[in-house]
Amino acid sequence: MILSWGLADNTASTFKSSSMANTAHIPTSNSALIAMIADEETVVGFLLAGVGNVDLRRKTNYLIVDSKTTVKQIEDAFKEFTTRTDIAIVLISQYVANMIRFLVDSYNKPIPAILEIPSKNHPYDPAHDSILSRVKHLFNAESVASTRH
Image: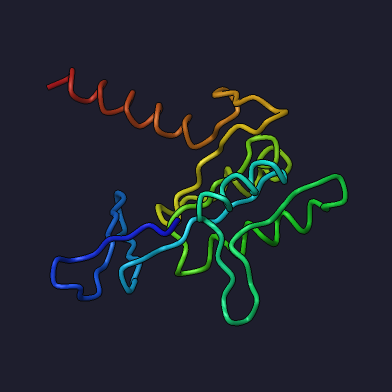
């Protein structure tokens, strides 16, 4: 599956997202990719849905994590996916994110967005999702500020 942000006249478009102090842009030719870091069953499910991509240099947009995958390989894939300009979203199984929690927690850019997802053998625990915690904190801060006015 390719995320597309196109214009009616089929010209190239730019997806924009802004945070407090800076603005991020994804220059695209009407598409951006979803990257995956997860167990085999989860990745295969998304590949069957059309998320997979292999570029001209044979680089994929996914990493299958199994018992032989090292933490270093997961870290390297996370760093690669979060610096690629053609990726808009990185889906990562929560149990895998826990292996590199320090990297996930320190990532603070709006694009690509990092989403922690459940896997077949590891249920989702909202208490361990750092992105969800940030969103809750942001909304709590906004609601406190709005009640003061």
